[in-house]
Image (cartoon, rainbow, N blue to C red):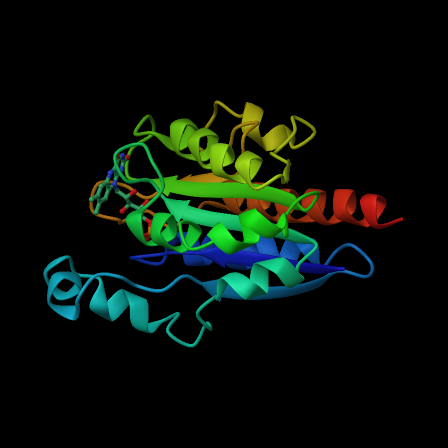
Length: 203
Ligand SMILES: Cc1cc2nc3c(=O)[nH]c(=O)nc-3n(C[C@H](O)[C@H](O)[C@H](O)COP(=O)(O)O)c2cc1C
């Protein structure tokens, strides 16, 4: 079974979460995972002004996804930073290129999940994931979140991302906070959970 982790990251938080999600999938026998980023759509000048050019070098080696890759997968786990409570434009543009897959029903019955990142605790993580789910449902995918069997989402002793909708991290206003151990554990859990359900469906 082939599982894709497809993401966009501007400053590295989602990249870091994506690696943990991929790690989690590998805990399930028979899971083969491939990581892809979606095409950057902003010009270098804008990225420079946003302080993202340097950060993006760290994951420039990750291949850019094509929509055809989606059709080859059994499960796809998407990662996007929050942009005003929604997915980022780069991801939106990528998904808007899946019209042919929609026409062909190529993603119907595949498992899908979403994880995210925002600057602030209440800056739109849940709305980002839930609104992303709409697109996955239109494509006919079976949505998998982060069940409460991941107990780490119950924590109140420290600031943490993670909700029944999916793993998440809080990056801080200046991007100064990297995913915590608990948030990475949530990402690994979601990856493993998606892989386990995909494996059951394959049987
Ligand atoms: C145009 C723009 C809009 C953003 N909107 C929000 C927002 O609504 N809520 C929030 O908490 N953070 C917001 N952020 C912060 C990003 O979500 C944050 O930089 C990102 O999660 C970091 O992940 P990354 O390092 O993978 O890019 C926004 C950032 C940009 C550039």
